[in-house]
Amino acid sequence: MEAYYEATGKKEFLQIMERFADLLCRVFGPGEGKCHGYPGHQEIELALIRLYGATGRKDYLELAKYFIDQRGTGENYFLTEEKNTLYRQIFPEFAGYDTKYSQSHLPVREQKTAEGHAVRAVYMYCAMADLAGMYQDEELLGACETIWKDMTQRRMYITGSIGSSGILERFTTDYDLPNSSNYSETCASIGLALFGKRMAKLTRDASYMDVAERALYNTVLSGIAQDGKSFFYVNPLEVWPDNCMERTSKEHVKPVRQTWFGVACCPPNIARTLASMGQYMYFTDGKALYVNLYISNRTVLELAGEKVSVEMNSDLTNSGRIGIRLGRNEGAEPYSLALRIPDYVKEYKILRDGKAVAAAGSRSGQGEESREDRVEKGYLYIEGIREKETELTIEFHVPAQFVRANPRVREDSGKVALVKGPLVYCLEETDNGSNLPAVFIDTDQEPEERYEEGLLGGVTVISFKGKRLTEDAWKDGALYAGRKNSFEDVELKAVPYHCWNNRGSGEMLVWMKELL
Image (cartoon, rainbow, N blue to C red; front, side, top):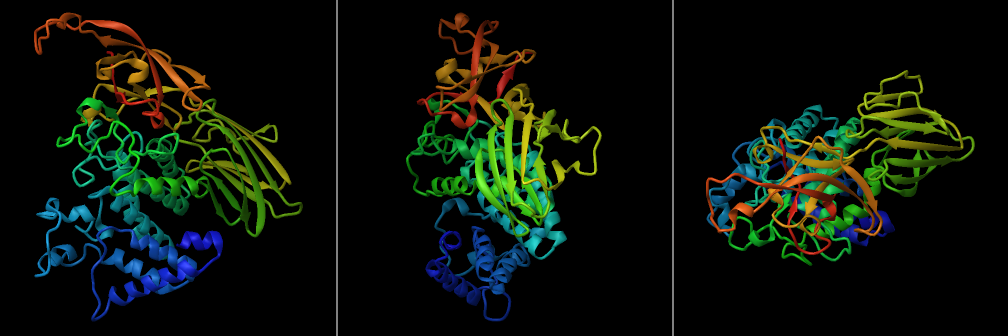
Protein backbone atom coordinates (compact mmCIF):
# COMPACT_ATOMS: atom_id res chain seq x y z
CA MET A 1 0.00 0.00 0.00
CA GLU A 2 2.90 2.34 0.71
CA ALA A 3 4.25 1.57 -2.78
CA TYR A 4 0.83 2.44 -4.25
CA TYR A 5 0.89 5.72 -2.34
CA GLU A 6 4.39 6.50 -3.61
CA ALA A 7 3.38 5.78 -7.20
CA THR A 8 0.01 7.58 -7.22
CA GLY A 9 0.01 10.01 -4.31
CA LYS A 10 -3.41 8.65 -3.31
CA LYS A 11 -3.87 8.09 0.44
CA GLU A 12 -6.99 5.91 0.62
CA PHE A 13 -5.16 2.57 0.88
CA LEU A 14 -2.47 4.14 3.04
CA GLN A 15 -5.08 5.27 5.55
CA ILE A 16 -6.52 1.73 5.69
CA MET A 17 -3.06 0.42 6.52
CA GLU A 18 -2.63 3.08 9.19
CA ARG A 19 -5.75 1.81 10.93
CA PHE A 20 -4.36 -1.74 10.91
CA ALA A 21 -1.01 -0.47 12.19
CA ASP A 22 -2.76 1.52 14.93
CA LEU A 23 -4.43 -1.69 16.07
CA LEU A 24 -1.04 -3.41 16.24
CA CYS A 25 0.34 -0.55 18.32
CA ARG A 26 -2.57 -0.86 20.74
CA VAL A 27 -2.22 -4.64 21.14
CA PHE A 28 1.58 -5.20 21.05
CA GLY A 29 4.52 -3.50 22.67
CA PRO A 30 6.00 -2.70 26.06
CA GLY A 31 3.89 -1.77 29.02
CA GLU A 32 1.17 -3.27 31.14
CA GLY A 33 -1.84 -4.82 29.44
CA LYS A 34 -0.13 -5.32 26.07
CA CYS A 35 0.97 -8.53 24.40
CA HIS A 36 4.75 -8.90 24.67
CA GLY A 37 5.03 -11.27 21.73
CA TYR A 38 6.50 -11.00 18.26
CA PRO A 39 5.50 -12.31 14.81
CA GLY A 40 6.07 -15.85 13.60
CA HIS A 41 6.59 -14.72 10.00
CA GLN A 42 8.72 -11.61 10.20
CA GLU A 43 7.31 -9.27 7.58
CA ILE A 44 5.32 -6.83 9.67
CA GLU A 45 8.54 -5.17 10.83
CA LEU A 46 9.40 -4.16 7.26
CA ALA A 47 5.84 -2.96 6.66
CA LEU A 48 5.88 -0.81 9.80
CA ILE A 49 9.25 0.69 8.85
CA ARG A 50 7.96 1.59 5.38
CA LEU A 51 4.75 2.98 6.84
CA TYR A 52 6.85 5.16 9.12
CA GLY A 53 8.69 6.41 6.04
CA ALA A 54 5.40 7.37 4.38
CA THR A 55 3.69 8.91 7.40
CA GLY A 56 6.42 10.01 9.79
CA ARG A 57 4.59 8.19 12.60
CA LYS A 58 7.36 7.29 15.07
CA ASP A 59 5.15 4.78 16.91
CA TYR A 60 5.23 2.53 13.84
CA LEU A 61 9.03 2.56 13.78
CA GLU A 62 9.20 1.95 17.53
CA LEU A 63 6.88 -1.06 17.29
CA ALA A 64 9.08 -2.56 14.55
CA LYS A 65 12.09 -2.03 16.80
CA TYR A 66 10.24 -3.58 19.74
CA PHE A 67 9.47 -6.74 17.75
CA ILE A 68 13.16 -7.08 16.84
CA ASP A 69 14.46 -6.28 20.33
CA GLN A 70 11.97 -8.56 22.09
CA ARG A 71 12.64 -11.58 19.91
CA GLY A 72 14.44 -14.41 21.69
CA THR A 73 14.52 -12.70 25.08
CA GLY A 74 13.17 -14.23 28.28
CA GLU A 75 10.83 -17.19 28.05
CA ASN A 76 10.21 -17.99 24.42
CA TYR A 77 6.91 -16.48 23.27
CA PHE A 78 5.96 -19.38 20.99
CA LEU A 79 6.68 -22.03 23.59
CA THR A 80 4.59 -20.04 26.07
CA GLU A 81 1.73 -19.93 23.59
CA GLU A 82 1.82 -23.73 23.33
CA LYS A 83 1.02 -23.93 27.05
CA ASN A 84 -2.18 -21.96 26.61
CA THR A 85 -5.29 -24.10 27.14
CA LEU A 86 -6.74 -22.76 23.88
CA TYR A 87 -3.67 -23.77 21.85
CA ARG A 88 -4.28 -26.26 19.01
CA GLN A 89 -1.52 -28.03 17.08
CA ILE A 90 -2.71 -27.51 13.49
CA PHE A 91 0.50 -28.45 11.70
CA PRO A 92 1.99 -31.79 12.80
CA GLU A 93 5.43 -30.81 11.51
CA PHE A 94 5.66 -28.26 14.34
CA ALA A 95 5.36 -30.85 17.11
CA GLY A 96 8.44 -30.49 19.31
CA TYR A 97 8.85 -26.91 18.09
CA ASP A 98 12.43 -25.81 17.42
CA THR A 99 12.75 -22.11 18.21
CA LYS A 100 15.54 -21.79 15.64
CA TYR A 101 12.82 -22.20 13.01
CA SER A 102 11.50 -18.73 13.84
CA GLN A 103 14.91 -17.23 14.70
CA SER A 104 13.67 -16.81 18.28
CA HIS A 105 16.28 -19.07 19.92
CA LEU A 106 18.45 -16.11 20.95
CA PRO A 107 18.18 -12.32 21.07
CA VAL A 108 18.93 -11.12 17.55
CA ARG A 109 22.12 -9.33 18.58
CA GLU A 110 23.52 -12.62 19.86
CA GLN A 111 22.72 -14.68 16.78
CA LYS A 112 25.79 -15.79 14.83
CA THR A 113 24.36 -18.16 12.22
CA ALA A 114 21.54 -18.13 9.68
CA GLU A 115 18.89 -20.44 11.09
CA GLY A 116 15.38 -21.68 10.52
CA HIS A 117 12.91 -20.83 7.78
CA ALA A 118 14.99 -19.08 5.15
CA VAL A 119 12.42 -16.56 3.92
CA ARG A 120 11.40 -15.48 7.40
CA ALA A 121 15.07 -15.19 8.34
CA VAL A 122 16.14 -12.87 5.54
CA TYR A 123 13.08 -10.65 5.96
CA MET A 124 13.99 -10.28 9.63
CA TYR A 125 17.61 -9.51 8.71
CA CYS A 126 16.33 -6.79 6.35
CA ALA A 127 14.42 -5.18 9.22
CA MET A 128 17.50 -5.46 11.44
CA ALA A 129 19.56 -3.66 8.79
CA ASP A 130 16.96 -0.92 8.39
CA LEU A 131 16.78 -0.33 12.14
CA ALA A 132 20.56 -0.43 12.49
CA GLY A 133 20.78 2.43 10.01
CA MET A 134 17.93 4.47 11.42
CA TYR A 135 19.05 4.20 15.05
CA GLN A 136 22.81 4.17 14.33
CA ASP A 137 22.90 0.86 16.19
CA GLU A 138 26.39 -0.53 15.64
CA GLU A 139 25.70 -3.67 17.67
CA LEU A 140 22.70 -4.53 15.48
CA LEU A 141 24.71 -3.79 12.33
CA GLY A 142 27.46 -6.07 13.62
CA ALA A 143 24.94 -8.88 14.07
CA CYS A 144 23.80 -8.36 10.48
CA GLU A 145 27.39 -8.57 9.24
CA THR A 146 28.07 -11.75 11.22
CA ILE A 147 24.92 -13.50 10.00
CA TRP A 148 25.56 -12.37 6.41
CA LYS A 149 29.05 -13.86 6.49
CA ASP A 150 27.78 -17.19 7.83
CA MET A 151 24.94 -17.35 5.33
CA THR A 152 26.87 -16.41 2.19
CA GLN A 153 30.16 -18.18 2.96
CA ARG A 154 28.82 -21.45 4.39
CA ARG A 155 25.10 -21.85 3.63
CA MET A 156 24.49 -20.39 0.16
CA TYR A 157 24.44 -22.08 -3.25
CA ILE A 158 26.54 -20.87 -6.15
CA THR A 159 23.29 -19.58 -7.71
CA GLY A 160 22.60 -17.29 -4.74
CA SER A 161 19.87 -19.53 -3.35
CA ILE A 162 19.44 -20.32 0.34
CA GLY A 163 17.42 -22.72 2.49
CA SER A 164 18.66 -26.20 1.60
CA SER A 165 16.05 -28.33 3.39
CA GLY A 166 12.74 -29.24 1.81
CA ILE A 167 11.44 -29.97 5.30
CA LEU A 168 10.40 -26.69 6.94
CA GLU A 169 12.07 -24.75 4.07
CA ARG A 170 15.04 -24.03 6.28
CA PHE A 171 18.76 -23.67 6.71
CA THR A 172 20.48 -26.78 8.03
CA THR A 173 24.20 -26.75 8.90
CA ASP A 174 27.36 -25.34 7.39
CA TYR A 175 28.24 -26.66 3.91
CA ASP A 176 25.12 -28.85 3.70
CA LEU A 177 24.20 -27.94 0.12
CA PRO A 178 22.60 -30.88 -1.73
CA ASN A 179 21.85 -30.22 -5.38
CA SER A 180 18.91 -32.47 -6.29
CA SER A 181 16.81 -32.21 -3.12
CA ASN A 182 17.37 -28.60 -2.04
CA TYR A 183 14.47 -26.22 -1.51
CA SER A 184 16.03 -22.84 -2.38
CA GLU A 185 12.74 -20.99 -2.48
CA THR A 186 12.59 -18.13 -4.97
CA CYS A 187 11.32 -15.79 -2.23
CA ALA A 188 14.37 -16.62 -0.11
CA SER A 189 16.73 -15.38 -2.84
CA ILE A 190 14.61 -12.26 -3.23
CA GLY A 191 14.95 -11.70 0.52
CA LEU A 192 18.70 -12.29 0.28
CA ALA A 193 18.94 -9.63 -2.45
CA LEU A 194 16.87 -7.23 -0.34
CA PHE A 195 19.19 -7.81 2.61
CA GLY A 196 22.30 -7.37 0.46
CA LYS A 197 20.95 -4.14 -1.02
CA ARG A 198 20.40 -2.71 2.46
CA MET A 199 23.84 -3.74 3.70
CA ALA A 200 25.53 -2.27 0.64
CA LYS A 201 23.72 1.01 1.14
CA LEU A 202 24.63 1.13 4.83
CA THR A 203 28.30 0.19 4.44
CA ARG A 204 29.11 1.31 0.88
CA ASP A 205 30.68 -2.12 0.43
CA ALA A 206 30.18 -3.57 -3.06
CA SER A 207 30.64 -7.18 -1.88
CA TYR A 208 27.03 -7.18 -0.68
CA MET A 209 25.84 -6.30 -4.17
CA ASP A 210 28.04 -9.08 -5.60
CA VAL A 211 25.81 -11.56 -3.76
CA ALA A 212 22.58 -9.69 -4.52
CA GLU A 213 23.47 -9.74 -8.23
CA ARG A 214 24.21 -13.49 -8.08
CA ALA A 215 20.77 -14.16 -6.56
CA LEU A 216 18.94 -11.88 -9.00
CA TYR A 217 20.65 -13.14 -12.17
CA ASN A 218 20.29 -16.82 -11.32
CA THR A 219 17.69 -18.01 -8.81
CA VAL A 220 15.25 -15.10 -9.09
CA LEU A 221 15.26 -15.22 -12.90
CA SER A 222 14.98 -19.01 -12.95
CA GLY A 223 11.81 -18.62 -10.88
CA ILE A 224 9.84 -17.36 -13.89
CA ALA A 225 9.50 -18.75 -17.43
CA GLN A 226 10.55 -16.56 -20.33
CA ASP A 227 6.92 -16.17 -21.38
CA GLY A 228 6.02 -15.01 -17.86
CA LYS A 229 3.28 -17.60 -17.46
CA SER A 230 4.75 -20.25 -15.14
CA PHE A 231 6.99 -20.30 -12.09
CA PHE A 232 9.40 -22.27 -9.93
CA TYR A 233 8.87 -22.14 -6.18
CA VAL A 234 11.83 -24.50 -5.62
CA ASN A 235 15.13 -24.05 -7.47
CA PRO A 236 17.31 -27.20 -7.52
CA LEU A 237 20.73 -27.43 -9.14
CA GLU A 238 20.18 -30.92 -10.49
CA VAL A 239 16.98 -32.45 -11.85
CA TRP A 240 16.07 -35.92 -13.07
CA PRO A 241 12.34 -35.65 -13.86
CA ASP A 242 11.66 -39.36 -13.34
CA ASN A 243 12.43 -39.25 -9.62
CA CYS A 244 10.55 -36.04 -8.81
CA MET A 245 7.77 -38.16 -7.36
CA GLU A 246 5.07 -37.41 -4.82
CA ARG A 247 5.40 -38.98 -1.38
CA THR A 248 9.18 -39.12 -1.66
CA SER A 249 12.02 -36.87 -0.52
CA LYS A 250 11.87 -35.18 -3.95
CA GLU A 251 8.17 -34.35 -4.04
CA HIS A 252 8.87 -30.63 -3.55
CA VAL A 253 11.10 -30.57 -6.66
CA LYS A 254 9.19 -29.85 -9.87
CA PRO A 255 10.79 -30.68 -13.24
CA VAL A 256 8.67 -28.03 -14.99
CA ARG A 257 7.46 -24.61 -13.92
CA GLN A 258 3.96 -24.45 -12.44
CA THR A 259 1.20 -22.06 -13.48
CA TRP A 260 0.27 -21.31 -9.84
CA PHE A 261 0.65 -22.51 -6.27
CA GLY A 262 -1.59 -23.01 -3.27
CA VAL A 263 0.65 -20.61 -1.37
CA ALA A 264 1.49 -18.25 -4.21
CA CYS A 265 4.06 -15.94 -2.65
CA CYS A 266 6.76 -16.39 -5.29
CA PRO A 267 5.03 -15.23 -8.53
CA PRO A 268 3.99 -11.77 -7.27
CA ASN A 269 7.26 -11.42 -5.39
CA ILE A 270 9.18 -11.95 -8.64
CA ALA A 271 6.95 -9.40 -10.38
CA ARG A 272 7.48 -6.69 -7.79
CA THR A 273 11.23 -7.42 -7.67
CA LEU A 274 11.63 -7.02 -11.43
CA ALA A 275 9.54 -3.84 -11.25
CA SER A 276 11.82 -2.41 -8.54
CA MET A 277 15.18 -3.14 -10.17
CA GLY A 278 16.02 0.56 -10.17
CA GLN A 279 16.42 0.39 -6.38
CA TYR A 280 19.16 -2.20 -6.83
CA MET A 281 20.83 -0.57 -9.80
CA TYR A 282 21.48 2.86 -8.27
CA PHE A 283 22.05 4.45 -4.87
CA THR A 284 22.37 8.17 -4.26
CA ASP A 285 24.17 9.71 -1.31
CA GLY A 286 24.35 13.47 -1.21
CA LYS A 287 26.28 14.35 -4.36
CA ALA A 288 27.38 10.78 -5.12
CA LEU A 289 25.77 8.37 -7.58
CA TYR A 290 26.44 4.65 -7.01
CA VAL A 291 26.07 2.27 -9.96
CA ASN A 292 25.52 -1.26 -8.62
CA LEU A 293 24.08 -3.32 -11.46
CA TYR A 294 24.86 -3.04 -15.16
CA ILE A 295 21.47 -3.44 -16.82
CA SER A 296 20.38 -1.44 -19.87
CA ASN A 297 18.10 1.40 -18.79
CA ARG A 298 17.26 5.07 -18.94
CA THR A 299 16.44 7.06 -15.83
CA VAL A 300 16.69 10.45 -14.14
CA LEU A 301 18.03 10.62 -10.59
CA GLU A 302 18.22 13.46 -8.08
CA LEU A 303 21.53 14.38 -6.47
CA ALA A 304 21.47 17.17 -3.87
CA GLY A 305 18.45 18.74 -5.56
CA GLU A 306 19.91 18.49 -9.07
CA LYS A 307 18.72 16.15 -11.81
CA VAL A 308 21.18 13.72 -13.42
CA SER A 309 20.07 11.69 -16.43
CA VAL A 310 21.53 8.22 -16.98
CA GLU A 311 21.44 6.09 -20.11
CA MET A 312 23.08 2.68 -19.92
CA ASN A 313 23.56 0.14 -22.68
CA SER A 314 24.91 -3.08 -21.21
CA ASP A 315 26.21 -6.29 -22.76
CA LEU A 316 27.68 -7.49 -19.45
CA THR A 317 26.70 -11.16 -19.75
CA ASN A 318 28.02 -11.53 -23.29
CA SER A 319 30.93 -9.30 -24.33
CA GLY A 320 31.30 -7.51 -20.99
CA ARG A 321 31.01 -4.08 -22.66
CA ILE A 322 28.91 -1.33 -21.07
CA GLY A 323 28.25 2.22 -22.20
CA ILE A 324 26.99 4.91 -19.80
CA ARG A 325 25.96 8.43 -20.76
CA LEU A 326 25.42 10.96 -17.97
CA GLY A 327 23.78 14.36 -18.35
CA ARG A 328 23.05 17.29 -16.06
CA ASN A 329 22.08 20.96 -16.20
CA GLU A 330 24.66 23.60 -17.07
CA GLY A 331 26.16 25.15 -13.95
CA ALA A 332 24.98 22.43 -11.56
CA GLU A 333 27.20 21.42 -8.65
CA PRO A 334 29.83 18.73 -9.43
CA TYR A 335 29.04 15.21 -8.35
CA SER A 336 30.85 11.92 -7.78
CA LEU A 337 30.32 8.59 -9.52
CA ALA A 338 30.95 5.23 -7.84
CA LEU A 339 31.10 2.26 -10.21
CA ARG A 340 30.85 -1.22 -8.72
CA ILE A 341 33.66 -3.51 -9.88
CA PRO A 342 32.15 -7.01 -9.57
CA ASP A 343 34.07 -9.70 -7.71
CA TYR A 344 34.26 -11.88 -10.83
CA VAL A 345 36.05 -9.13 -12.78
CA LYS A 346 39.81 -9.35 -12.45
CA GLU A 347 40.75 -7.14 -15.42
CA TYR A 348 38.90 -4.21 -16.91
CA LYS A 349 39.22 -0.89 -18.72
CA ILE A 350 37.19 2.26 -18.19
CA LEU A 351 37.26 5.28 -20.49
CA ARG A 352 35.82 8.62 -19.45
CA ASP A 353 35.14 10.79 -22.47
CA GLY A 354 37.73 8.74 -24.37
CA LYS A 355 40.47 8.92 -21.73
CA ALA A 356 41.46 6.03 -19.45
CA VAL A 357 40.50 6.26 -15.79
CA ALA A 358 43.75 5.91 -13.87
CA ALA A 359 42.57 3.62 -11.05
CA ALA A 360 40.98 1.14 -13.43
CA GLY A 361 42.68 -2.12 -14.34
CA SER A 362 42.06 -4.60 -11.55
CA ARG A 363 39.55 -4.93 -8.74
CA SER A 364 42.20 -3.88 -6.23
CA GLY A 365 42.69 -0.64 -8.13
CA GLN A 366 46.38 -1.20 -8.80
CA GLY A 367 48.05 1.47 -10.82
CA GLU A 368 48.66 5.16 -10.44
CA GLU A 369 45.74 6.67 -8.58
CA SER A 370 44.94 10.35 -8.84
CA ARG A 371 43.10 12.55 -6.39
CA GLU A 372 39.99 12.18 -8.48
CA ASP A 373 39.72 8.40 -8.82
CA ARG A 374 40.25 5.50 -6.43
CA VAL A 375 38.98 2.00 -5.65
CA GLU A 376 37.48 1.43 -2.21
CA LYS A 377 35.43 -1.56 -0.99
CA GLY A 378 34.81 -2.69 -4.56
CA TYR A 379 33.67 0.69 -5.91
CA LEU A 380 35.72 2.79 -8.31
CA TYR A 381 35.13 6.44 -7.42
CA ILE A 382 35.37 9.19 -10.02
CA GLU A 383 35.25 12.51 -8.22
CA GLY A 384 34.27 15.99 -9.30
CA ILE A 385 32.27 15.40 -12.48
CA ARG A 386 31.51 18.89 -13.78
CA GLU A 387 30.77 18.36 -17.45
CA LYS A 388 27.24 18.81 -18.78
CA GLU A 389 27.58 15.43 -20.50
CA THR A 390 29.92 12.58 -19.57
CA GLU A 391 30.37 9.37 -21.51
CA LEU A 392 31.85 6.23 -19.98
CA THR A 393 32.92 3.07 -21.75
CA ILE A 394 33.49 0.03 -19.52
CA GLU A 395 35.09 -3.20 -20.68
CA PHE A 396 34.87 -5.96 -18.09
CA HIS A 397 36.83 -9.12 -18.84
CA VAL A 398 34.25 -11.85 -18.13
CA PRO A 399 35.46 -15.10 -19.70
CA ALA A 400 33.73 -18.40 -19.02
CA GLN A 401 35.56 -20.36 -16.35
CA PHE A 402 35.29 -23.55 -14.32
CA VAL A 403 34.98 -23.08 -10.56
CA ARG A 404 35.08 -25.49 -7.63
CA ALA A 405 33.45 -25.58 -4.21
CA ASN A 406 35.10 -25.64 -0.81
CA PRO A 407 36.02 -29.29 -0.07
CA ARG A 408 33.68 -29.16 2.93
CA VAL A 409 30.74 -29.02 0.51
CA ARG A 410 30.53 -32.81 0.32
CA GLU A 411 27.95 -32.80 -2.45
CA ASP A 412 30.32 -31.02 -4.82
CA SER A 413 33.59 -32.84 -4.06
CA GLY A 414 35.37 -33.66 -7.31
CA LYS A 415 32.95 -31.52 -9.32
CA VAL A 416 33.08 -28.22 -11.19
CA ALA A 417 30.57 -25.60 -12.17
CA LEU A 418 30.75 -23.25 -15.13
CA VAL A 419 30.25 -19.50 -14.75
CA LYS A 420 30.51 -16.42 -16.93
CA GLY A 421 30.33 -13.11 -15.15
CA PRO A 422 27.29 -13.17 -12.83
CA LEU A 423 25.73 -16.14 -14.64
CA VAL A 424 25.93 -19.75 -13.54
CA TYR A 425 25.60 -22.20 -16.45
CA CYS A 426 24.02 -25.65 -16.62
CA LEU A 427 23.69 -28.66 -18.90
CA GLU A 428 20.25 -29.58 -20.19
CA GLU A 429 19.14 -32.90 -21.58
CA THR A 430 17.79 -31.27 -24.74
CA ASP A 431 21.38 -30.31 -25.72
CA ASN A 432 23.42 -33.11 -24.16
CA GLY A 433 21.30 -36.24 -23.86
CA SER A 434 20.13 -38.07 -20.77
CA ASN A 435 21.99 -39.29 -17.67
CA LEU A 436 23.95 -36.07 -17.28
CA PRO A 437 25.73 -37.26 -14.08
CA ALA A 438 27.58 -39.78 -16.29
CA VAL A 439 29.48 -36.88 -17.90
CA PHE A 440 33.05 -35.98 -16.86
CA ILE A 441 34.67 -32.65 -17.77
CA ASP A 442 38.24 -31.90 -18.86
CA THR A 443 38.93 -28.59 -17.11
CA ASP A 444 42.31 -27.98 -18.79
CA GLN A 445 40.52 -26.76 -21.90
CA GLU A 446 39.36 -23.23 -22.71
CA PRO A 447 35.54 -23.21 -22.96
CA GLU A 448 34.28 -21.88 -26.28
CA GLU A 449 31.75 -19.05 -26.13
CA ARG A 450 29.23 -18.45 -28.87
CA TYR A 451 26.29 -16.05 -29.00
CA GLU A 452 23.16 -17.66 -30.42
CA GLU A 453 20.65 -14.99 -31.31
CA GLY A 454 17.81 -17.42 -32.01
CA LEU A 455 18.16 -19.44 -28.79
CA LEU A 456 16.20 -18.55 -25.67
CA GLY A 457 15.81 -14.95 -26.75
CA GLY A 458 19.50 -14.60 -27.52
CA VAL A 459 22.15 -16.01 -25.16
CA THR A 460 25.82 -16.83 -25.06
CA VAL A 461 26.20 -20.62 -24.98
CA ILE A 462 29.38 -22.31 -23.83
CA SER A 463 30.77 -25.42 -25.50
CA PHE A 464 33.47 -27.73 -24.12
CA LYS A 465 34.69 -31.30 -24.35
CA GLY A 466 34.11 -34.14 -21.95
CA LYS A 467 33.72 -37.87 -21.64
CA ARG A 468 30.62 -39.90 -20.96
CA LEU A 469 30.37 -43.28 -19.27
CA THR A 470 29.06 -45.79 -21.79
CA GLU A 471 26.75 -48.72 -21.13
CA ASP A 472 28.65 -51.06 -23.47
CA ALA A 473 29.71 -53.37 -20.62
CA TRP A 474 26.23 -53.41 -19.08
CA LYS A 475 24.10 -54.71 -21.90
CA ASP A 476 23.24 -57.81 -19.87
CA GLY A 477 21.30 -55.62 -17.43
CA ALA A 478 23.49 -56.32 -14.39
CA LEU A 479 22.98 -53.84 -11.56
CA TYR A 480 26.41 -54.31 -9.97
CA ALA A 481 29.56 -56.01 -11.25
CA GLY A 482 33.37 -55.81 -11.07
CA ARG A 483 33.77 -54.23 -14.48
CA LYS A 484 35.94 -51.39 -15.73
CA ASN A 485 34.36 -48.18 -16.86
CA SER A 486 34.47 -47.26 -20.53
CA PHE A 487 34.10 -43.75 -21.89
CA GLU A 488 33.26 -41.99 -25.12
CA ASP A 489 34.23 -38.46 -26.14
CA VAL A 490 31.39 -35.93 -26.14
CA GLU A 491 30.87 -32.29 -27.06
CA LEU A 492 28.83 -30.50 -24.42
CA LYS A 493 26.79 -27.32 -24.54
CA ALA A 494 25.83 -25.23 -21.51
CA VAL A 495 23.20 -22.51 -21.21
CA PRO A 496 22.57 -19.97 -18.43
CA TYR A 497 20.93 -21.60 -15.40
CA HIS A 498 18.07 -19.11 -15.39
CA CYS A 499 17.11 -20.28 -18.90
CA TRP A 500 16.62 -23.95 -18.04
CA ASN A 501 13.26 -25.65 -18.65
CA ASN A 502 12.16 -23.18 -21.30
CA ARG A 503 12.42 -25.88 -24.02
CA GLY A 504 10.44 -28.68 -22.44
CA SER A 505 10.99 -31.12 -19.60
CA GLY A 506 14.32 -32.87 -19.20
CA GLU A 507 17.35 -33.37 -17.01
CA MET A 508 19.42 -30.41 -15.77
CA LEU A 509 22.83 -30.31 -14.06
CA VAL A 510 24.96 -27.49 -12.64
CA TRP A 511 27.78 -29.34 -10.83
CA MET A 512 29.65 -31.68 -13.20
CA LYS A 513 32.21 -34.37 -12.36
CA GLU A 514 35.79 -33.34 -13.09
CA LEU A 515 37.99 -35.62 -15.19
CA LEU A 516 41.24 -36.08 -13.28
